[in-house]
Image (cartoon, rainbow, N blue to C red):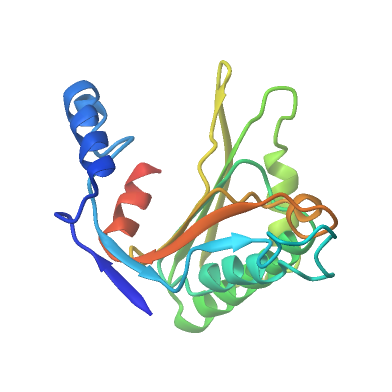
Length: 211
């Protein structure tokens, strides 16, 4: 189900946050923050699910839906995707994302149209991202006769780096929140809990503009 969120339907917390932003951070409007709207798709995405009352590790494959959902959204891209995270994917995350990229590459070939996939990661202090290696991993099995265009970058300035997690597709759908692309931390034994949200509408455009 989808629940529409109108611009005027701000909670008292939302109204207070907006008041603070407009008063003290107006120069960053529609660069680092924006008032927007959209529809929530399904429920809040959290992992691992159904474990609050358990004192044992969840069963194997407990959160494999997460990389699958991210990859399925990426695979829908027809024009442009911004895919942003703290660090590059590993394990199942990498495998499913590579398959999604192959799907988009085939679409570009079949339609003879350029499609852009733009990946941005944080360049964490003492753990730099090897963008060339990530690009190679993404493109090793891709055909060379499509019009798919892939960008891979990482960002750091001083002790600050990208920490956003966003998958925004064609100005239509966005998945954003707290989940990183780490197989051992999210998908295996003793996983951490995190939450994200899948939305459609204007909020997706703002996610693209943020990038």
